[in-house]
Image (cartoon, rainbow, N blue to C red; front, side):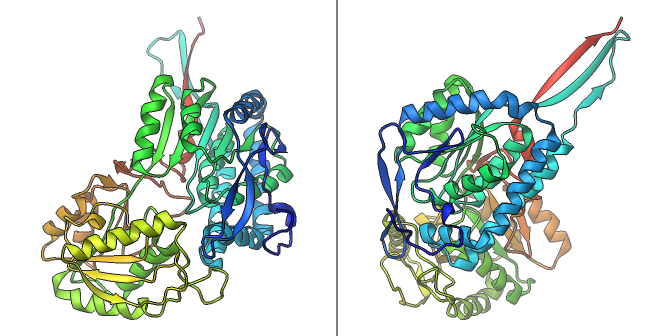
Length: 488
């Protein structure tokens, strides 16, 4: 496309070519694939469609760049990351515009993602200079024992479409801070945000080969290639549990180190002593952000029977205020789902629930496009319904009632997933009991927002392993080396 589909202050941020070894490239075969605006289905870009030979070129570039990048002092890497962070903030509105264009979320929400994504670069620019080793007391008087941390090597980050900026920065900021070089395979639906980040990374002084952005319409072929390549030491993936298991199986042949942030089935438990108004406010934040397309989004509302009617009515009142439509309109709060497959899945889950006895408590048919689904509140939801077992990834609130604390904990834990969970209660003793009993990597207590750069984000069970963010996040990209020195 010769003409930008949007107005940008910095038009250089709108890139359609891949970024390999510090250069923009169309790839060896110069193939492209279309990127669509999810709201109106218009083609907004024709992005370079890389082939295996291009991916191999990128791995070679990253492998060559690794020793030099790793040998920089942590202060030098920190300084470059700080410059990158500042450039992102300077260009935040353009980056948010690109994000809304390709992903669909409301502009103010996209702007929030850009700022949130930048916090990971800021955080890990500081963590880069706080990587400490150990001196271990030796059992032998003639030996000195030490442990140092070193970068693991070339890292692949495979990122999802729902947060096309922040899921990249959350992975690659700690990798770069640790001294690794990185290959990013962005989602096919949303590669433009990744390419825009590369523009600013290059300007910040990240050397050639250290960061590479590899769009491709062949994610399975790319995944197989990454898993098999001997020069790739680590893969960090966010996406479905099915794909995570596939990568784990394929990566076993070369013993790839993996970080997997996979599917969720978040319960939102409201006890009868809770502040119902606060719980409804938290529910709106947790459930409807990005039209329900988040991995920590509430999937199941578990509401105590004594407050069920009050909660449902107050939730419906708030949901009724939400505007649905084009993410570029000022009053839009819920944008489109990402594509037709997403719409089809949500409609299947909705129809399955209704067929099995769920009741529509609230629905406002204000859809303005086939890609937009208005919020729906379902009651009398039971565990046998598909939406109780699978991620909805859409603006449907599925509500189940409970009577006892034990029942709530059982329902919440009755899933193979274990990513995020939420509880609302005023009882301090209950807070301790329930948070410790919930089989989840993260628990929000009287809040619907739990994601920050300073916290260890990640799950247990079939929601994956590894942590992103926090002081623990950089450990995922380092190896421990034990050194024993004879001083006799």
